Amino acid sequence: MRFLAFLVVIAVIWFAGLMAFADRVQRSTPAVDPGRADGIVVLTGASDARITTAMQLLLDGRGSRLLVSGVNREVRREELRALTPGPNRLFDCCVDLGFDAEDTLGNAQEIAAWTEAKRFDSLIVVTSDYHMPRALLEIRGLMRDAELIPYPVETPSLDTEDWWRSGQGMRRMTLEYSKYLVVLVREAVLRLFPEQRDEAAAAQGAATKAAVNA
Image (cartoon, rainbow, N blue to C red; front, side, top):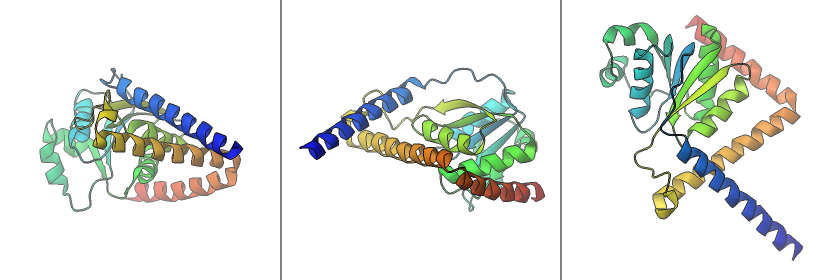
């Protein structure tokens, strides 16, 4: 009975956390004016809305440079430029493409290396609304001194207010919340064992050197 009661308590806590997470996502859009930062970073996804939004922020002068992280290696720079708003000269001069990231942790590593190479202190982070909490957690794990300004993009295929009414919405929200919890636990463990953080920092330093040399 005690074990069963323990499981019930864990389930209630998990469900309450899911509700809080979903409410956070629902309240995050429309995004507020981010002001101005040193740079802008966008994490790629299934929709082009993230990239077009980030490019519009660059066009509006919200940052001096833009990093598109997680670009498919088969996508050519010219193809991506054709999909983004603004003049070609702005894209050519001020947009950097990252091809190494394959997941959110890879995005964070790519963003950290780029930020260090450019010597930026503040970033506007652009990604989907439901993805933003985990993205910020991953990036902050590698860049604790940088100012991160979230600029979430609304997801048309996800009704963040009534997500629980559809199977697709429920799967997406619960899966993202579960991934967020995994990262949250991992970051807590890394704080307890700083030597693991030092190894991650060493790997980041190698990535930074490669980015500078590139």
